[in-house]
Image 1: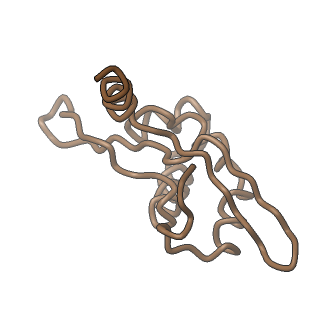
Image 2: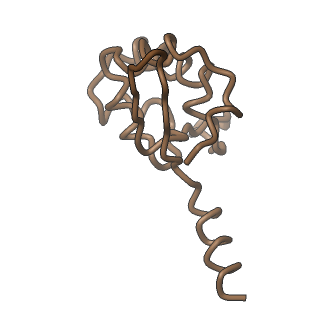
Length: 117
């Protein structure tokens, strides 16, 4: 799980972002690092909307830049990855949000290696 105390978030902003059109699809599609263009093509979202949603998710620290690749013309292309696999929201006296972390593959390999030692 992601320790939500480490993510400086406003629960209302997170709930709004998660409820926005295309957000769940974008987070689901970005479980592995991908360029924005590939994410929005797979989700079938307008490119401008996709960029706005990804920027909003990055500001909320729910998505991160997880590498770069080189375009055909030699420019850098950022690869985005969702930090979360699952989200659970409880509406009690306050809003409580829990996330299941989307670990980087390299992190999982390190964990497996550490267990084998």
